[in-house]
Length: 114
Length: 115
Image (cartoon, rainbow over all chains, first blue to last red; front, side, top):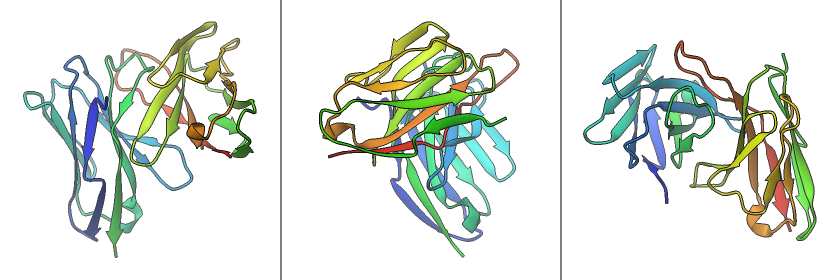
């Protein structure tokens, strides 16, 4: 049973555009929601994360929006660049300090055309 | 710091063979985990450890064993390889603190093919 569902599976955006990736979760005990970025041949790397007591978090061009009542969260990449082309994973866990059990979404392959 | 080191990077096994995927970290992280990555399924947790001598099962543990005799090492053993275990395997480590977010540090992966 996939507890974190991610969409779309793939996304093509023009340079300078906005990339939006959505995730929905089922387990209301989740309280830590990170996003990971993965380049081909590499392991995932933490991009940005949010807790459910915050509705939005921004770091540079990357923004997480969180809707606790809808059990949804999304990643927005503003001014998308070709270097952002990668696979993005949302994830969720119980306890940001547990560090041991992340549940991942299925991933979104983002292509930013120049 | 080397971070999280996984060996080998590539491996081909025959059905029924056994092998150990190695994972080592030099950051003194207490938590270590093994994930497998399959197309369209994200990363799924196989086993994890919250410290030396302590391990537990994740979402897909069948066919795999782990042990954690030291803080640094967390090997993953395939007991009798099956084609369904063809995947990319990632080891990750992390630590806990109360100051804010933590993130996993992932290794670069082991691509395993079982024929």
